[in-house]
Length: 193
Image (cartoon, rainbow, N blue to C red; front, side, top):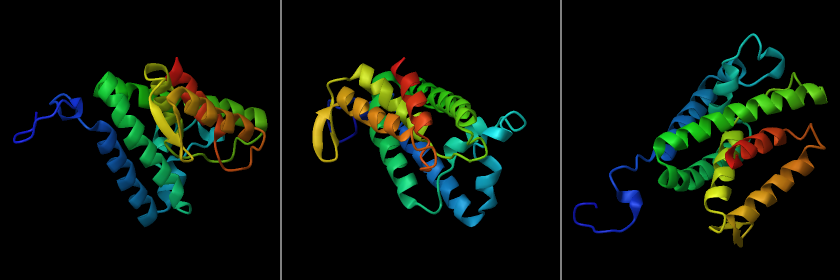
């Protein structure tokens, strides 16, 4: 309950920490730092050929986004705030963070393996997409009938997750499209499991 306002909405309960929004704010702040100091992106992006000597890149790439394509951070932060807040409400902030970061790490490791198989191990990867797809996968299991809008069409969460996974499966056949489709799929797989 908020003083002067009664609600049954559990988002207003004292246990809800708004971690997804705070995480989006941190990522956006780091994006601004990338704009100010471009070498930051090279220093912390996931580059599979360097991962054995610079293992921090498995986590740090989650906080970086393309400075040449503003839609990259916009869509990721939109998905993080929207789906993250819902998942956080369902599982609590600690479990939400656990799902987010482990999905990001699993997505990174999976995409590193795929990059070596495809011969693209020198192409850097950045973004929170794998972690966010983990959140989407978890919601597909926990709230499969929740209605979401995809391309202006309402559909159950499970169908939306399947649709997004299908797009990424198709994208696997074009390893040079600058979308880390395998990271999305590995992240979603972790979220589902």
